[in-house]
Length: 241
Image (tube, rainbow, N blue to C red; front, side, top):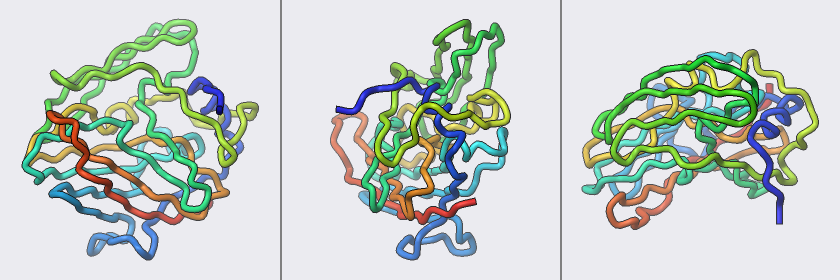
């Protein structure tokens, strides 16, 4: 059984990882006029994704995480649950699953009395709201709450694996994570009503240079019944820079 490690250790591990960028593979259905953006549809749910869209701060975020912009359009006739646990990147050869990390779990154990406020936006969902993070010494976070069903869960500790680096290297992002941009641009959790659209970035464990390709997987779930609506897959090739 693989041991659990804190997210901060995962971020420290990322310093030696080759910066990777995701581009739709030849098998992906790309949007007309935008070769970086791919789309998948099933059961009335459309997933649009771009693995090269991050333009915020830090500019070198890809050294620590793999940010993927996603947009979900719901025409399923149901209310959908939006949770990070329902998204993953899976190595096409390694089959290693790179987990989606809620932004507040990325707070490093650094003493700080400051707070950051940001706004999450979506349409047809459970609403938008603000992010409040105030961390003191050791591991403490604030809360992220923006709707009746949109509360964050407990911190998520990702696994290490054969395709994931060890925890003893140097962290190289330009500033402590999460940044204001990361919080403001993150995909909000909550519910998405029929006819609604929600969009934002998902921050995955960094995809290592050992991968040639990954599959973005989204598993939409009926918020009322818990029934799965299947899996939406978008294949990406992994470029190195």
